Amino acid sequence: MNYLLLTIISIIIFYLISKISKKFNLLDYPDNRKIHNEPTPYVGGFAISILYLIIIYFSNFVSEFYNNILVYGFVISLFGLIDDKYKIGIGSKLVLQLMPIIFMIHSANIYLENLGEYELIGFVELGSFSLVFSVLCIFLLINSINYIDGLDGLASIVFLSSCLSFLFFSHFEHKELNIFIFSLIIPVIIFLFFNFNLFYLPKLFLGNSGSNLLGFLLSFISIFVYKKYNIHPALIVWSLAFPVYEFLSTNILRIWSNREIFKPGHDHLHYEINQKIKNKYLTNIIILLIIIFYSCFGYFIFSFFNSLTSIITFIISFFIYFFLRKMLTVKKVIFTKE
Image (cartoon, rainbow, N blue to C red; front, side, top):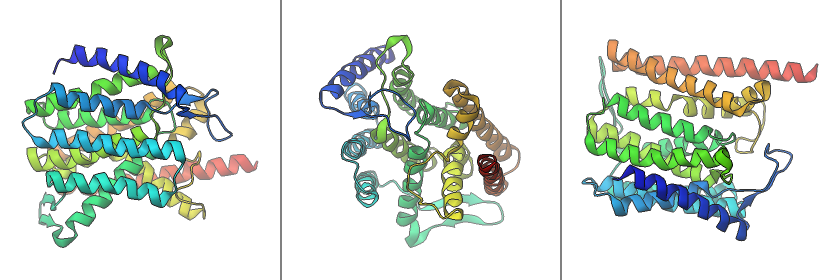
C-alpha cells in the first residue's frame, strides 16, 4: 500500500465530502445539548468507510478477512449515516447494526468459540453460546465507541491507540497485519485534522456512521488477532479497557439514578473533564494517557504473571474505575445542589 497516495486521496475525499454534505443538508445543528456553535457535516465516518473501500482496490491482502471487514464496515457506516439523517429509534438502530455483524460473522466465520486458555482452568469454552456471546461483545464495543464520540477527536484517538496496541502486543511481527493496521489509521489521522479544524480545513464530525464503523472494526480485529495470531484475549481486553469501562460505568450509574440508559447526556468522563479544564485538546491528552496506562499495565501483568492474573486484574480494575466514576458523579451532584 502506498501510504503517501492514501494520504493525498484521504485529504481529497474529506474535502469533497464536506462540500457535498452541505448541499444535501447532512449537517449536525447546534442545540442545548451540543457544544458546537455552527452546523457541521457529520459525514466524516462515512468518508473514512469510502477510503477503506479504496484500500481494497489498491491492496492485495492474502487474508479475505481484511477485505470482508472493510466491505461490511462500509455497510454499517452507511446505516449509521441513515441514523444521523433520520434519527431512527433505538430498536431500529440495533437491527441495522446487527445485519452487517451477522453477515461478517457468516462470511468470514469469525466469532469467539472460547475465551482462551487460563492457568488452573484450561480453555474457557463457550459452546452453543459462542455466537450469541460474540454478537453481544461486538454490540458492546460498537456502542462503547458511540458513547465516547461526544468530544472532537476522542473516538478517533481511542481507535488509533487500540489499533497500535494490537501491533505492540504482536511485537510488529506480522507483516500483513502491520500493513492493514497502518492502512486503517492513516485516514483516521487525516480525519483528525478536519475534525479539529486545523490549517483552516473544513470541520467534519465522525457521526454515527464513524463511531459504528470504528467500533465494528475494533470488535472484529480483536477477535481476528486472537484466532489468527494467537494474541491472548486476556491481553487484548486491556487495549479496549477505557471505552468498555466507561460504557459499563455510565450505564450502571444511569440505572442507579433511574435514568434512561440510551438517552444522550453529559454524564460521560470526557464531558466531566472538559467541563473542568475547558480545553478539548488537553481532555483528549488526559484520556489518551489513561488508555496508554491501561495498555502498558495490562501488558506488564500479562507478561510477568499469567493470563489468569491478567483477566482477574482487568475485572478488579473495572471496579476501581467504576468506584472513582461514582465518586466523581456524587461530587458533581453535591456541587450542583450547593
